[in-house]
Image 1 (cartoon, helix red, strand yellow):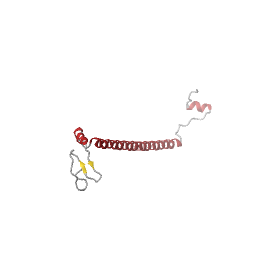
Image 2: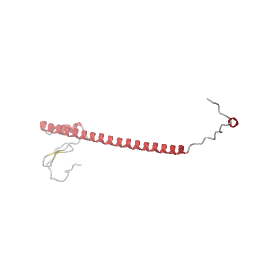
Image 3: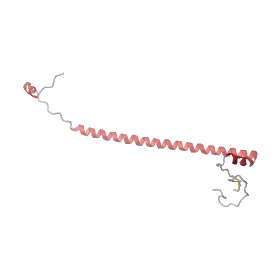
Image 4: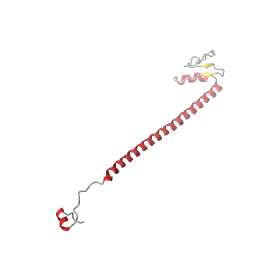
Length: 133
């Protein structure tokens, strides 16, 4: 590898004197363009990840709601069968198991046969929600 020449040595040999190195004009523009592309790519990736997160959350939420609805209907079917087998005594026994659970038995005409407190109520006139919150 040749040693760098001093300016005097270069002139004595007839070699051109190297000029001070300048940054090419396109170099600054290139860096700005590169920075803009990187920012754009980061934005695209961020938006894509947020959209994927939102879509995944929505799909999982809908699956969970559907699962809970099916399980609730299944439990209601079990309660109906238990009432058919053992009568309304089943409901009285269930009131003792869990105090925060509410079961209301309504006949096909819409009259409340068994309410919140675990007691039988007399069929009432159709007056909206019939005392149920």
